[in-house]
Image 1 (tube, one colour):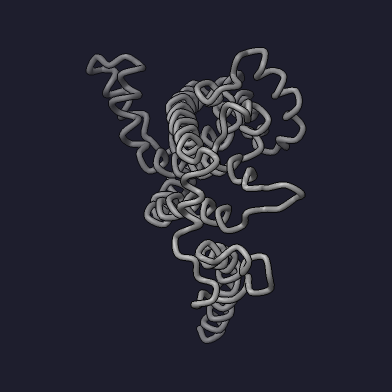
Image 2 (cartoon, one colour):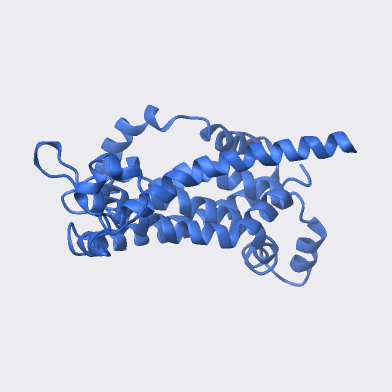
Length: 279
């Protein structure tokens, strides 16, 4: 018992240090987003706010009024919402079908989804860019179908794990009462899958919202810019970077998603645990 307490204390100290190491860069970005430009470009970048370097909300105003922040925010929001909704609906239905049919084809399909999670994006990005142009998927209104392909692996894996825990008797009772497969899924299975829906939704939202490489390769940056793409445009001539507005923009992007994650992290754990009980 004493040994377990000592181990728990050591682990608590180690994980506390790791947490601080992760939070520190975010804290410094937050602090520097309120500093004057010359203070960020010197060694005082690591200093806390004081009367000599404090610049108020000027960096935030600059970030909001330049580079098309409003349109970039709108495109990011549109891409995130459409992609996550498409992933949740399509992948949950696919996982339910794969688990309930469970023939050779479905088993092979399931393992293909799982295998897709280990394929590096760099192997596909050049051919993907050409394919997106040919199919007309290079706009914020259509890129959600590409995200569906890349997000399906994790989503199907988590949904399938949860579907295995749902008793088939519930679905059989619904069909006896006259429900067809579509009605059975949306009226019976989907409400039961709520914990996993929330878990997958949060994970996919954080991925799509913060993604830089895929929109940069697929979208025309002269017409469409998401928030991650917009951040790199805070650059002047000869390599000069406007660090103040850039850090203010970063904070306006990460704070909402961090708040959502902190408020919903218990649902992520519940969803993962629920899908790991059986199968």
